[in-house]
Structures are given as C-alpha cells and as structure tokens.
Length: 164
Length: 177
Image 1 (cartoon, each protein chain N blue to C red):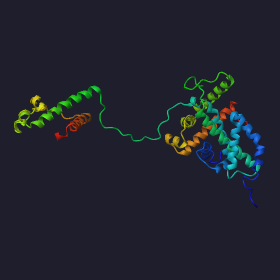
Image 2: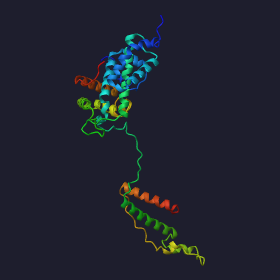
Image 3: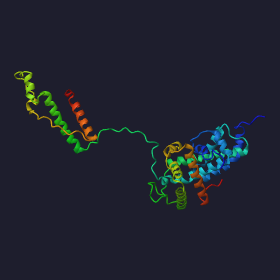
Image 4: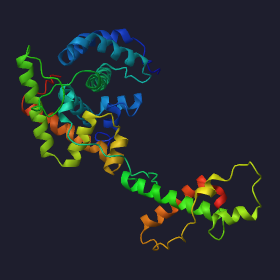
C-alpha cells in the first residue's frame, strides 16, 4: 500500500469525519484508497447487525479532568450527632461567658442594675448554673481533628456572631 | 479546448450505471436500494468535480455509493435493534427464529469477527470495537487512547482490512463487486 491517505484521510472521509468532494475524486482514482474503502464497508456491514455483541469494555474518559473536592470530612450519623452535642455545650459555655466574664451569670445582671419591677428576668441567665472552667482539650492530632474543630467554630459563629 | 462541465450530459452517463448501482445496493440493503440509489445520484449531480469520462465517472459513483453505505450501516446500528449472538453477554433481543439460515450466517460472521479481533493487538481491536459500538469520533478515540489522530485512523484501517480479509476467506463477505 503506497498511498498515504488509504489508512488515514480515507478512513476519516469514509465515516463522514472529513468532508470534501475532492477526496471522493481521489478515492475514485486511487486503487489503495478504493481497497481501503471496500474493506471498511465490508467490516461495517458485517458488524452492523450485532454491534451490541462487540461491546466489551468501558470507554475511559478522554482525559483526567480536575474535580472540585470539598475539604470537609464526610459526616457519619453517629459522629455527627456527637459533634452536635459538643457544639451545643460549647455554645452554652460561650453564651454564659458572654453574660458573665468571670463565669457567674448573675453578676453580669447585677452590674446592669436591678431589673425593673414586673419585668421578666432573663430566663436563660436564671436557669444557667455557673459553668465550670472549660476543660482544656488535647491539641488536634490530625487533619480530621483540625477540620472538626474549625467546623465547630464556624457553626458557633453562624449561630451567634456576637461571640467574637 | 473547452473542458466539459461535470453536469453536461449527466443523464446519459447515469443511465448505463443505474442497473448496476441498483444491483450493488440490492445485494447489500435490499429494502433501501432505490432510496440509496436516488441519494447517490443526488450527491453526484450536486458535486462540482465529478469526472466526465465514463470510467472515472463510474468509479466516482461507486465511491460515493460505498461511503453512503458505510453511513447507512452506522445509522442502522444506532436506530435498529441489535441481535444477541454472544451467548447472552449482551442485553439485546434474540435472533428471529423465522430465519434460521440468516441467524446461522450471522452467528458465523460474528464468530469470525470476534476471532479476528481477538488475534489483533488490543489497541487495534479497541478502536474497531469503539467505532462499532459507540458514537465516538476518531478524535475522541485518539484522545482516549493517548495517540495521534492518524494512529487511531490507521488502527481502524488495519482492523477493517483484517476483518474484511477474514470474512472473504470464510466466504462471508457478500462482496460481489
């Protein structure tokens, strides 16, 4: 086979991936391209009735495309509710601390002066007992721990931005 | 000396080929022979560079006809039902029991094609399989195989040539012209 088009251009042209009457003219006059076209036609005709049976493997993607990956850890149900409980406790601690810098929620109320008679007292302040000082937690040992801590802080911030 | 225009005397050049062209299509796609022949004449008459001399014109007409057939085979593959001849590997419909001879021939053709593909280099067989079973362009196939477009085209050419030869040797090609 000496025509360079027989195994390239003619193949593309035969399946409509290359337009042009000029190539049709070339194929009509080129024995190599004619032979190529005949082989392609015979093979296509042979497999056309049962192309499904030739399906063998999965077609891979053209190239590896960057996929946006969320950097938060996957939430597992049990773990999520545990984190939620810790977040709630932390929020309560922060709230109580805001009410009373020294840790006594009632002293903050006292510094503002007595409540007007007949006015309802702060129900939260009235119910919240003095909180023990926060237990120092172990430093984050892994990326997951750090992410968990960050997530908790974010949740707390979303709930009450004034804690800053 | 004036060159004759491609459209000059076209009916006179078409007439002697009409029967041969119809026979060509009847052997390959009998139910669509007439429609396909019409399509060929439409393409030939609208081409600006169809040869004017008889021998060149005939070659040109059958070149257009073969290209049209390839296109039709591909379309029918997409539209039509597929026949399961692989022992249930695919989910397609079973062959019709009303044509046992056709079913046997089809099974034989498939066996030849599979044997041929199995003997090829995997990357060559893969191009042929992808072309036969998906709508991937050669450009897409080249990208997926990590090769040049010409390499992908060359692999298809190689696969088709070997399959055509194997079918010919098995007396299953059906090519009579």
